[in-house]
Length: 138
Image 1 (cartoon, one colour):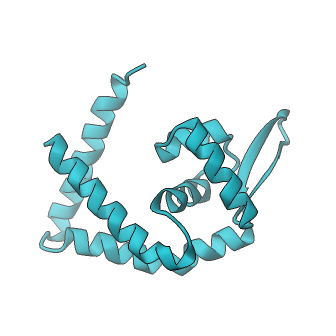
Image 2 (cartoon, helix red, strand yellow; image 1 turned 180 degrees about the vertical axis):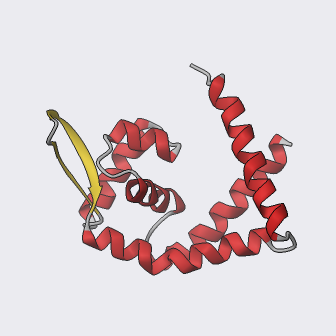
Image 3 (cartoon, one colour; image 1 turned 90 degrees about the vertical axis):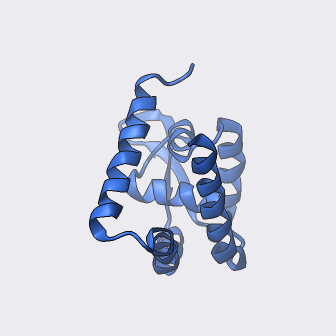
């Protein structure tokens, strides 16, 4: 089962990389932007955890995304010692530009499943994730 899930992850990443390549983006960079869209003002460590990459990989990614004007860092108003990251207007525009293309990948992935089966698959995947989150490795 784990092997099949890893194959699915790699197939999804290949499709994402294919549509994002003309923009000079990777699937991991796109993922980080979508995380910031849902959870603005994260620290780099929080963004790394939510994007499933190491802190070092995220630091490199932040440098690239900031240089492209897609994100910005600023002081957290509630704790001036913390630097947090947010999308810029350009970052939000880029996400809007690719939203339909990314949704088409999901539609392709779920083709052959009816609505109930797709919902059940999502629920089962979320349950599997929750089961592992309870016993996260150190």
